[in-house]
Structure formats: structure tokens, C-alpha cells
Length: 124
Image 1 (cartoon, rainbow, N blue to C red):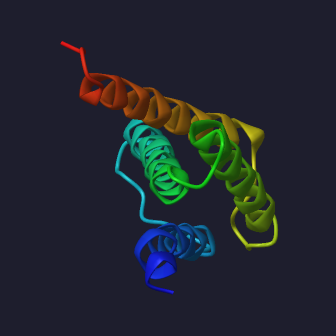
Image 2 (spheres, one colour):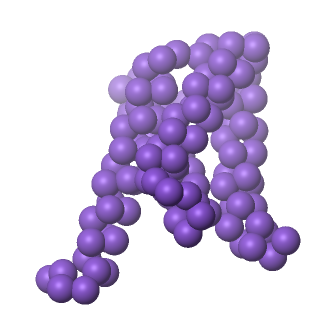
């Protein structure tokens, strides 16, 4: 139970936070449309990058391919969240947002791999 709480509670809480924000009919907007899009898409990428990193942290010792599994789980959650948004008044789910989420996930997994290689013996 302690292992579950330590490793799986953080991604579950993060998923709940994503669900909460995607359940809101109206999110605050920036005064300029281009800034609003930039901030919201950056939040998408960052949010799913963090989620994939939390999955990786939970899976690192148990999964055969933790990075691929983390990437897959994060993208599946992104798809399910966009579908969920189709039921929220004032919101819509788009594959474009899943793509932005995927960019965040990909960057997080590349960063995790880079950090892992730096920690390996013989790395500079």
C-alpha cells in the first residue's frame, strides 16, 4: 500500500486535476487571442508532460518498457480527456489538442532519457 501511495497516487491526483480543469465550461482567457492560444496550448503540453513523467516514475521498476508504457498511458488519457470535453457545455474535444499533449509527452520522455543517460556510468 505504501508503494502504491508513493508512486501511483501522484499520477492519479494529476489526472484528477486535468479532469477538473477540462470539466470547467469556461476557462479564464488572456486579453490577446494569440496569447490565449499560446498559454492554453503550453498548459496542455506541460500538463501531459508532467503526467507522463509521473507515470514513468511509477513504472520505472515494474514495467518492461517504462517509457513506451508511460507515453502510451499519457496519450490514452489525453484521448479520453478530449472525448470527455465533448460532453462539457462550452468545450469541445479536438485531435489537435491530443497532438499538443503528445508533444509535451514526447519532450518529457526525451528529457527523461537524456537525464537517465547522464546518470549512467561512463557518461560525461
